[in-house]
Image (cartoon, rainbow, N blue to C red; front, side, top):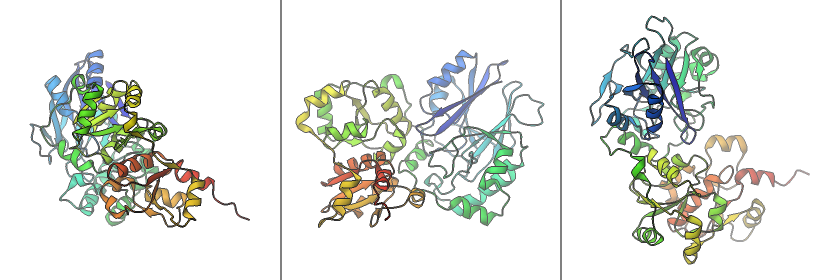
Length: 461
């Protein structure tokens, strides 16, 4: 058996290629949109992709099922409750998919979404115990999929939570302890709240350590898994809908387009949004007015999807040599209207120096002084509730989580200085640039975030 996991740190996303090395037949599960790596590995190991399975309608990225089907002629499989604009193979509970001696078996595990399935992998046809189970977003390492996302519009979190209780407590925990667990996401994903950084586990380990796998009744389970969930990024609903549609295919060979300085400025002047993917410190030193800073080093795709609209036409300023990477990562979350990028960003910024400006970043000491002054700024805390509870808060700060800021900026005064902060200064740079683009004139972010604030606390006497 050939079995490979592909992991994207940027999206905390895992996908899989499973094949029978004797027959050469293979299936890809939960693929990302840029599919060249799966195709290259399949070719290198003498495999042909005959099927593509999505465990559910993903909300946090655009899946690559259509690209793989077009490239290979493979069928596309979903749980039987799925409805799509393109032809699919409805997969039912207990259905077996032979690839040769290697066999896949469908297990319906609704709860994160109604159509969710897991995929049991048998290394040999006659094996009594599966090699592993690909759990999608039903079961994570240390957590379970959240049942409250917009991807499941029309079904309440309580209804989905009840489905998830049965899926996890009775079906997945009904598997033998030795079965390996391979989820679709790891730590950092907004699809759950306590995901581990480990990329695989076993049913036995999850039974012993995962809070949601301990035996409990339906009501207790639903209360536990729905409590304390962070706000989902705004692009989730868009991507979930896009994964149902017969959308345009992604082609990396045509996605990246270098622009002349004149072409870039003409598109910007016509309304395109400039996405500056440089480090926050570089951005603060000087950037084009109106640019939104989403640093490439970090959770770029998710954060870009949070602060940019899928309908925005985009222009990219990337760190040297990383433009194609940045454009691919935008496409992974459905930000497709990218006009192109500046091939020599530093030279271009020098040429456009008259249109550039620094970004205000304040130190913790300076913020403390300003808060004691006659015209104190309004401090906006962008962290999640769990971060605030664990680390503390700045007195009188307004709490607007980063994921909610794009649709809650109307709650902020435009005639008062604003200082935004997160944990370390990454999200606050993004958020401050977004507010400046939207017309807020006096916006700063806290250099070093709450961590720097805590370090400058007045020592007890």
